[in-house]
Image 1 (spheres, rainbow, N blue to C red):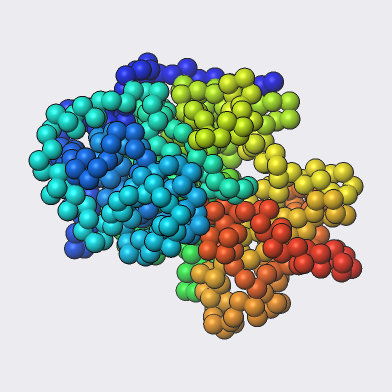
Image 2 (cartoon, rainbow, N blue to C red):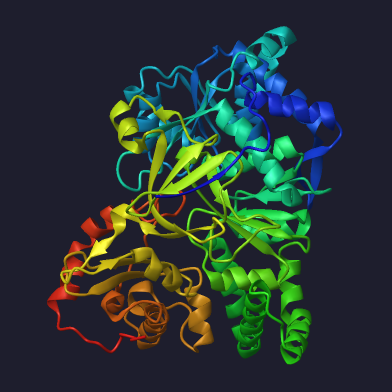
Length: 608
């Protein structure tokens, strides 16, 4: 059994809670701009002291509204400044937030609120309130429902004016490191969501140690970030809390269609994103260049960027001619991409899925170091992450300080340390099954290099075993295929089948531009595009590229393009855009059967 352990840098504090992080920040830098909110075409700063003042005022409102210490409070909202304001106001009131994705269905809302025992709920919009109203009769414990867009938070603040400061300070100090800080439900990719009990210690100790490990990112003068990933997910939630601890100025943009203008005006120094975002940035730039007749230049620039980065990481000398080409491309191509991201981005933290070495090297040559990491809700987000001074593209980095990682005999990644959750809420059976002698069993498969850098190679429950007995990790094929500009999602199938095949969906956002660049109708319907020879050929090329990295027995022999999209609304994706493999296999069983009923064509097999 292979094991790597990194000792904590900051000693644990058994009495600390999340609210203490804000108190410490205000004590150190009361006038530091901790947030910025949109105002006109620019941004208005909010200092640490002003944020704390607003937090206390809203916490008083919650007290006046009947919230008691330990109460579970549901919260449905987009990623805005108010999300973190509510988060800390509930901490100060001594309550426990139960975040709900703003895209959740009424049935999902009902399950989370009922299972958690929530006694009240905060919604952002009337639409959120209507979804809650559909299942309100099934939630006898829910008392008050406050809607932000209806001005209910302002009304609460007014009601709380008479609450004494001492009462808020008393409540703020009730929790210690072992107490529950939040109850976050898993995305439910493999079944009904389970509530993860994350403690104050999980957030406090991980924030304090991560800040030291990522000092170049979060503690550099003027550090700032623009959040657009949902803060209901542990990834962005942890970064929000880490940023308060570290003094990072944070802005928010919940509408990803407005992301580029927001980046241009906010000018962050680091970003938090999932691989799909980096794929979109790259693919959009490529298709834009293609539209302007500069596609060949862009692809040559990308090839040079990847070559230079790979040589640098390997410690090899970059040839003079390559240096000259890179300098030219830097002026013609890369500078424009940097400017599109605000011009100041130096780092990006990536998680939730493998990034791929190609994109890692490409952005590294742009001057943006992508620090790929790994973690789950159960590990308070990061367990490992590449560091600014210690990074390897293609890995998810070493363990963070205070975290231990080991691989069992099957290669399953197991985690122990300051970040590991306490239990699944009201589910002792699932809790017991998730641990092995204090180690959390992630269900993911990985491998270490000699320096303790972890590489994710698959998911234990998703390993496909063909009829010939070949074990195939779907992610190794799916991730590179998904990087193609017109491909949205791909699911590899073949369990107990004679060969590997794939279901593919098209990216409706990228498809019109790509079609226009092929001198085809940009308005081509999805069902027509799924059968068009040019689209079939493009998907074939993506599959051929992926097949080059696996053996013939693992290669995709056939594929089907579905005339539909997999979305969270359709029930095929989780809120963090992970595929629900079991649901897809069930819903598209007829299409899968058709693949294997038809004669096998080997024209789409690329043999290494």
